[in-house]
Structures are given as C-alpha cells and as structure tokens.
Amino acid sequence: MKTKIFCLSAFFLIAGMIRAQSQPQLHYTVSMPQAAKGKFHISLDVAGFNQDSIVLKMPNWMPGYYQLMNYANTVDSFFAQSINGTPLKVRKTNNNTWIIFNKKNSPFRVTYQIQTKRKFVANSFIDSAHAYIVPANHFMYVASMLQLPVQVKINSADQPKFNKIATGLELVKGKTNVFTAPNFDILYDCPILIGDLKELPAFTVRGVPHRFIGYNMGSFDEVLFMNTLQKAIEQGVNIIDHIPFKEYTFIGIGPGRGGIEHLNNTTVSFNGNELKTPADINRIMNFLSHEYFHHYNVKRIRPVELGPFDYDKGSKTTQLWISEGLSVYFEYLMVKRAKIVDRETFLDNLANNITAHENNPGKAHQSLLQASYNTWSDGPFGTSGQDKNKAISYYDKGPVVGMLLDLAIRNASNNQYSLDQVMRFMYQEYYQRLKRGFTDAEFQAACEQMAGTSLANEFEYISTTKGLDYQKYLGYAGLTLTSTEVEKSGQKKLQYKISVLPSITADQLFILNSWLGD
Image (tube, rainbow, N blue to C red; front, side, top):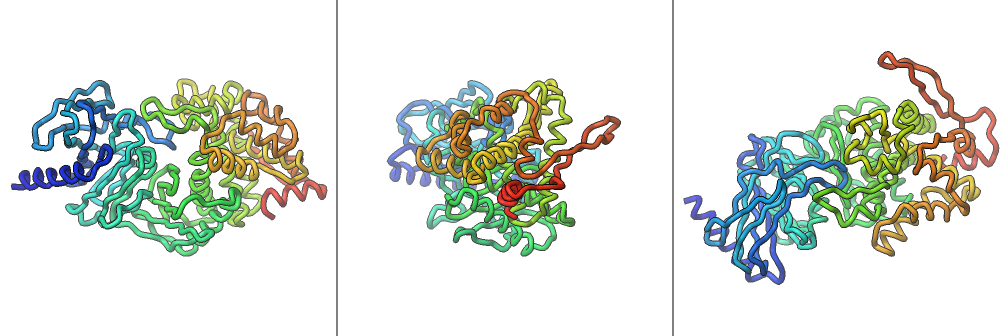
C-alpha cells in the first residue's frame, strides 16, 4: 500500500510540474529514514527537457575547499524511472557521470542514496541526532546546465529530532521546508544543517541581521560571545563599507575543525565548551572573522578563475594567497580594531606566521603564486604533497606579505591609503561595477594606484622566493623583528617576535596607530 501511495503522489507532483513549467524543472527531495546508518535518501523529479537523454553529474569538489573530494564515491543505489514507474536505461560513463535515456518532454524520477561516514565541514554527514548537507555532496546537476533553477524539499517527518533547519537558501513562500536557488552555483553555496538546533541572540550591523544557529554548541556566555563577535564584524564591514545581503547566518555544525565561507552564511565547526580563556576567545574570534571576511574576499572580490566553477576538475588560480592569506591578515585587523585583543597579541599573531614561514624549508622552493596554484596537490598548508619540504602555506606567508604590502602603501602615500582601500576598490570595481573576477595584474595595479608608485619590488615577494625584508617595512610603523633560538621536537628553530622600537618618530606612530585602530 505504501508503494502505491508513493507512486500516486509522485504522479501528481510531476503532473503539476508539467503544467507549471516554462523551462526545465528540477525538484529534489531529501529523506532520512536511515539516519542512524549514516544514509540520506535522495529523489530528483525532472521535467521539461526536450531531449531523449539527460546527463547528470555529481561535483568532484565544493568551492571554498580547494581539494578534490570525489563526492560520487558516496553515491549508491542509483535508479531512474518514468512517470508510470517503468525503469529507464542508465549508463554510468565515469565515476561522477550518469546518462539517463528517456523520451523527449517526458518527466522522470531519479533516486539514489548518499552514504556518509566522516564529520567534516566539506562533506555531508548524518546520524540519529542531526544532519549536515553539503549540497555539492548531495545534488547532481544536468551537464552544461548549471544555470537552471532548482528546488530542494527536506522531508524529516520520520526523524522527530530533526525539527529545525538552518541554511542560506531562500524558503519557498507558502511551503514548509521547501527551498529554492536560482542556479546550481547558489545551491552549492548554501549548506543545510538539520536537527535540534539552538539560536544565539542575534545582532544587527548597519540594520542587517546577523544570526548564529548551531548544533551541540556547548555551554558558554552566549550574550558576551555575540556582543564580542558583533564588534569584530562591524570592523570587517567598515573596511569594505557595504553589506551585500539581507541577512547573514553563522551555522555551527558541532565540535570539530574547519569552516567554509559562502555568500550569505558560513558553516563552522564550533564548540562553546572550549571558550575558557582569553586565548580561546582570540582564536575563535579570529576564526569567525576570517570566515565572515571571506564573503567579501573570494566570494565577491574573487580571482577571475573562481567563477564559473569547474565542478569536475577544480578551478585553479594563482591568487589564493589573496583570497586566503589576506583574509587571515584582515581577521587579525578586525579583532584588533574591535579592541578584542591588544596590540601585543595582534603583533604576536603575525609573528607566529613569520615563525612558521621562516622555519619552513619550502620557502626556498615555492612562491606564493605556486603555493596557490598547487594547493590541489600540496594541500593548503603545503603538507600533503610528495615533498612537504619544498612547499609553503599561503596561510602563513600570505598574511605576512599582506602586512608588508599594507605598510608599503601607507608609507608611500603618507598614510593616506592602505590595503583597506585596495580591498574596497576591488569590491567596488570588479564585483559591483564590472561584475567579474580580477586578474593578478589588476590586483597589483590597484595596490600601486593606492601607493602612488610602483610596487614591483614588493610583488617579487609573491612571484618569487626572494627573502622578505621585514625590518624595512616594520620600520615604517616603528616596529622591529627579533628572534630567539628554541628547541622543538629535538630540532633547533627560530622563534620571532615583533615589538615597538625604543624610539619612535611621530610619522611612525601615526602609521602604527592608524593601522591598528588605536
């Protein structure tokens, strides 16, 4: 009896799609009857295609995590049937591609399961208590038709604990748990968290609501936490001077590691039980500020290669040192200017990056441009490749070069311009006006425009392995770099420290205070 009801309901759903369609229709339904076994059940209702074969593809990666994830490996029980339940011929041509053979303009349904095992921000996961959906790990697209709109229905009736949903997707008006996206790029940009979720006290920045919703968030001072986070977010907004969305949501997926940025939300591993010391607060505020600033830097101020995305092979760019490295730099600035940390902590954050970079033998072998491009094989920290001693991390060298560029621009322009204005210009010129990504030459030109002079020497730090002249640039702000030898894991290494010079001029103090918001 259940099977007959299912088929009848499917018939009326698809028939309604036929009547309503003015273009191809793609409606997904996610069910979770086997949540305890780590499985999602997916159905896709398709209608309106004027062709006798449809090619469905599962993405191999998700934007924001620059590694091939091979999501198709989680798919099983793939099946296609016509509107009357007749099985359709299916041919799997490679690991992530299925061809469905069907009559033109005839609706059909595809079903499959997603098996999950690993709790991680870049892949889907489900258990009896909650579900986390990475859309690129869940939803197939029609080859060469990423521009099609799509609907997703979350069917959690058989899981009473799955009573709340957090996502950046738009809810379909008048429907419950049905969401829509204008295209697959937007769909893949909006993870979905389902479970007995908790929402922290929201805040507004320039009239725009900012929410924090999460699963298993632990015990901590929620009001103090959100008040502190608001201060950091306000500083990030001040840099660009514009908010491009109606609402922003921090989505805490539970304890763990990692966060991934999106246009109007971010998914972050979060455990409030760990917020015990000022160092813990510094770490989490840096982390959340970094993910928030990404909605500007990479999602909107983006390298030209990062859109449209190649969901098969990945989208390689030499500019991740900007997207990631400079986001680290600005996370430090946001937290310092918000007065969450003091000057010494801010300088220590940068000194830690210098320490990591200078003790890495890969600095003599790989440039920032190469590290950005090779992250697909080397990993973002340069430790996943065949020889980690010949690779660097743009998370370490990137923010340090950002600091040098910022101080160079401030010094050359008599502190009238800075890297803040560079990022604001990139946002206004390439995202708002030209509506496209930028090239490496265009980013250098923007920096030189603000400096009012050539920065060819500074950009050699990016394109080559030339050693960084820390003292020169730190000196512009009355700072100096010192080192001490320490022993770690049986090896002698240098530990670096940035501090204020004993004697500092008025010009240096002006740059230092303006830079740090003092």
